[in-house]
Length: 292
Ligand code: 13P
Image (tube, rainbow, N blue to C red):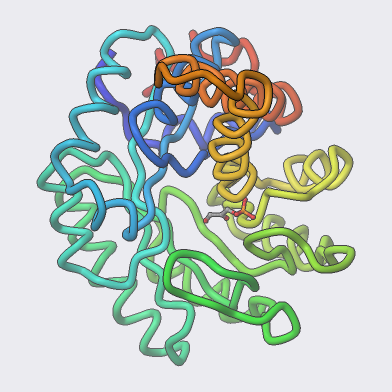
């Protein structure tokens, strides 16, 4: 089917308390593993792209890979731009066919973040594209941004309320709740009470950033409290590298590239399936398709 926007699929996930996996893609092989994993389990899926990945491949190749794979499957696929503070890249994605985008103004003072996010919101809304926006500071490395885990800042509850009031039709809201991008240095301290307080008054699906390294129990608790979009990047990148190297280890004399690509694909596919099962979105595609 054609690419879908993520708003309706996330609304349903939020209501029925399951999570939709949002994997950060790397190349065509990676997108294939993401879409094939979702197809095998009949699950809606979000393919998200970092600005660094766009700078590497360009808008058009990425859009055409994902669009083609989406058209060849019966499960809903959304193409999303991950953390981006550049409105020109956001516009470039929309023009190239992305169905949702994220504006990340979390490093700005609150008033400035609201102003810039609202600008992105107006652009996305006018184009019929969903917007994700963030407040607080999620720790770790994402793209060119680094926030030390001890410098991460939980979202302020009153600011969350004021922020979402300005943008009531946000497709997904990303408040910092103590998770971090990359591998966790220690035990993640998730602010469940803050999450529950936010979702008790804000009726917008929540994005859970920093999925790599969380336990099943942590995923379930966050999803049960309203996190409908669950982001996975670092784990996928590791499978990409490890899957490739594993073939070299097992067949040191292999000179044909395709077995390496297959090994890499299988490694990524395994994770995609595992995450979909853990998040509870297996078998949710047919209804989601009707609403997309
Ligand atoms: P991880 O790299 O920890 O999986 O986080 C991904 C993410 O939140 C992307 O925005």
